Image (cartoon, rainbow, N blue to C red; front, side):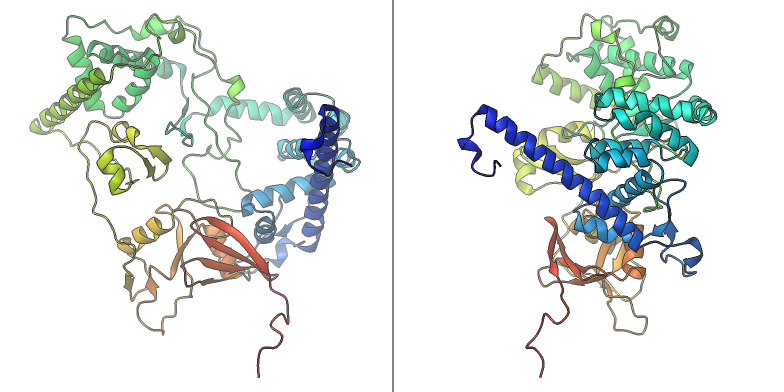
Length: 531
């Protein structure tokens, strides 16, 4: 009804048009679920059909108990057509299958446009580990209220229904949570910050907190004028080097203006909820059946998710301290402090080496920046494993220790070897050229663990130099298996981009700007050629 220029609509008409388009958007979401179900049916597979060749395709179950298995590689092509990774596509197909085979009432509500599709898919994911019988209980309890309550309230109702449906599993999960301990690193945000989530014994956390406070107070005594929370954040970096931390505490304690560190026992008097106080890092959901490589940044096996930020304890003592002012500190004072800390660190390690101690461990941080950024101190740089940062953050990234500047590598040089094995010098060049895997809509960063695939398969009887920077592309293990055993083909274009062709003839261009679909190859489309 309202397909013209929105600039011509008044407020009432604009609101009506908004409702129309929202309804149409939901209808299209429903159609995508229906398409995913049909696609799964076309790629139904069974476990006994699995080939014995290592790395070849398997039959996997994506939606939970009671769902049919499908061919493992099928998600790659479906995802490419939806502009998403194979892992995200596998999750989408699994949600659709779970709705049909485990949550039929919820699916009926979705098909009748009485329930929002994305909410239904989230419920399917929440019930993934339930038995068919338990999932059926959740289905009966929540089918009629998906769109009548807020998303937050719906999440709580679904959680309660899951616990009621399988009390034994809920109790086992609670016990497992009580046993979980570890330190997890979240992904970097847009401003170069990383979060750390810690779950440890209460006594250990209390003592750790007291040490962080002691170093924060030591920094204040040494002239740091920033707020307490900023000094506590800096203390984490200092604690990473025990020799340096001890020297900072010793230097501060020798000053008459130093404030005595708060005893660890005093920390026990404050309220601590759970085993630890920590930030909750944002992590991507696991890609079921897609990637078999471990990721230290993700929860360990047996831990399904990190705590909801809404459930994370909130500090009260530190936020009410008298020096919690968050105003910008004096830059000249900060530069003087940095020089003083660098001297303390250097002297501490020098003393350690002279007394026969061990040298500090090396930390490698790979920073990519232009000569202009380096000369002017302004601009944007890229840090491997973190992402873009502004040049002003380089100092705090490197810290107060010595650092090594590597020479510039000319990526125009074509380096090759005659062997199948890939030496480090070639691996580094490929990683610098392609910081992200080169499969359509791939998401994996090019790390030292990622596979480097020979675009033109290596031939032991072929010419020399087949392992070269132009014939290698980084692929995560799943993508590598899809390319080798899944009937995908790839070729290098003259401009350096890769052209991938899916099993059903859809072509995708992958270059430094990302992935774009080219077209569909039609049989006989080259009519007139030949002769």
